[in-house]
Length: 236
Image (cartoon, rainbow, N blue to C red; front, top):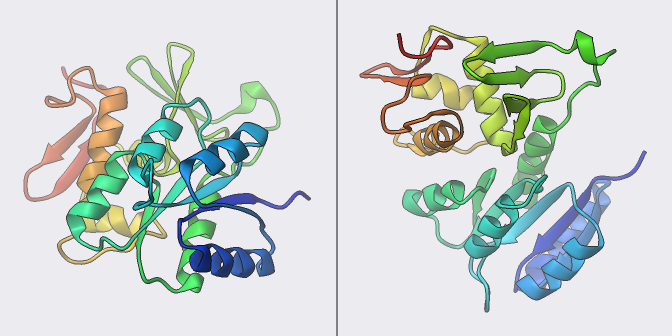
């Protein structure tokens, strides 16, 4: 079995070496880059299974890189690293498309746990046959629970691992009010605190992909004082 390939991008050579050695010892294939140019060279050679990406780097920063990767078909999941530890910084990182965010300094074991959680979201059992795939349909959309994909009128819509997992939770608990705390507990691998609003960021990202008017959602509705409710029939 091929090893999962991880690109570690950080301008600090000490962090690159530490993370690379630790992840290699845990059975991953690791390549490192100190800037966007080097990372782009690696990406042109082979697509990784995951990118560990530092926010603050000389030249093009991690946020800009994340935006570029997210715009590409089949972009890899991203775990953002940053010395910026405020909630707003984590929210910004998630808004540009990162699947998870880890503030510096960090314990390599915690990074490993985040990597495993994000990679698990991308693993789907192969269906016995195309016709046997489990699907949930709503409006013009179809969620293939076996292939972990979302399509609209037969055209696949690119989702991050975190976006797909949130959508799967919603379609599996349709017409039920789901609290923010409960949703965060289901999204394994994410750090949270009592004032964590990053679930709202994830919901807003998902709304932009399935709602005609994200500001007036038909499918993922806000329940005041309760959280969110997924209504597959839309407005009516």
